Length: 384
Image (cartoon, rainbow, N blue to C red; front, top):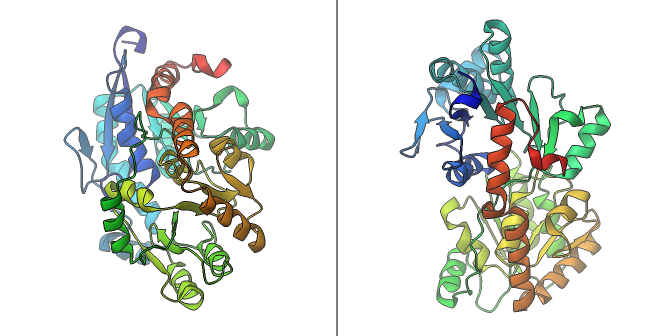
């Protein structure tokens, strides 16, 4: 039986699903909801255990944060992430054999490599579609198709010598309601109390890994400190890293009690964006920049480093500049805060994200991508 004669079977393995609440884990669930009823395809989502939903299958593995993964890492010298991926593939293999998908759509390179080797050794027939959400620069030798999430990463890969014939650009989907809700004063006040924002003080929000090397949270702290006594209250939300203590120490040193930092529940991010007056994230490079799109969808004036990627996401709806210069960041933050109360730009930001990245706009293109890649052809929209 060929894909053209029956429903095309798509496997969506996501090792962190159920344990992590980051970009691809959320994306997997949102994609499943967006295309599950699309014509001609059926999808199976495979997570890593933990908080699984009714229509998801848990795959046995040793999660990177588990005691067992740590112990094995010390014995064999492999890093925890590799152990998670390798053990997950062992648990995924029976499903790969029994369900026989036409396409495996993955984002973890180690898992994709294992699937590629299995296919090479056994001859099992399935195609591999790599979601390059992390903008890796490793060669795309062990997949059939590559989804780039921005033109910037497509162009960079082509410059490195990757074949344009098996790559295409399809951005990360973003959940965006049809209409941006009015800001609700009581709810905003409650959220600000949790963060400890003094009454009447502006709130500047940043969302991303709490690190220095990638998200540059320390640089944002320095810019906020340079704003002087009238500076906004800074809230940093994201996953902790090895560099988080350094970020925390810098905030204590420069901002006194004018900041809050922590990991915020994913289902409450809407309230965090609603409570903010402006958003800033100073990464010099992003895979897609989901936090940018989410902040913009919430109507927030945003500050970011100017690059082809941020211009692609924001269009003309943000305050962009060279964020390696503190004075430039200070000026951008001031401009963003001064624009926080204007309602028309707030609605325009939301509609920009809805038109460009909302699931209502993107779900037909995702469905066509899955059908096309499973049957060995480029998506029809990729040639326009």
